[in-house]
Length: 209
Image 1 (cartoon, one colour):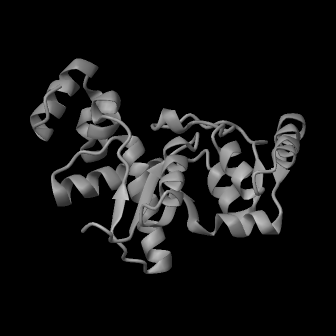
Image 2 (cartoon, helix red, strand yellow):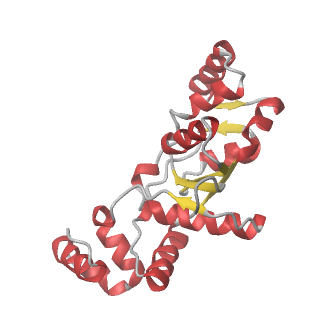
């Protein structure tokens, strides 16, 4: 990627923090094309970006990417404020609807504002597959959250045929999720205890604990 080239940004997120930072960076002049929002099975953000309806009335699913096990995405309110042309009262009304009814819907005009965003998600099977695929291809071990981003990005490329260079934001260390990471490579690791697993991950990855 050379200076000035447009890039896409791929972020695994439940709380919409890092991807909101990428949006602000784009507004400030960084040459960003698509903002790819990647969720796990708690895919409330995916549904919102695809429909304009934010609906938290669903069961919380406990996944292997726990930082994304979220149904109320607090930073999204800031983007809604922008999408409402910085109208605080409109934004407040939507947040009250979410608090009282568990759901809100944005206007068609606001949905047009979100055209630079793309939303998709990955389930556990897809996360494990992504970790194994990248390890075998690149000898790089992703954590479970980064794997969500990778899997969603692969879906984006398949859907859009967009080959713009992309930055996948890696948001955690594989050492935090050692068993899931190693089990995705080989099922034999599912029987090992945590500390031996860390030693094994260090040996495989070449990255010190």
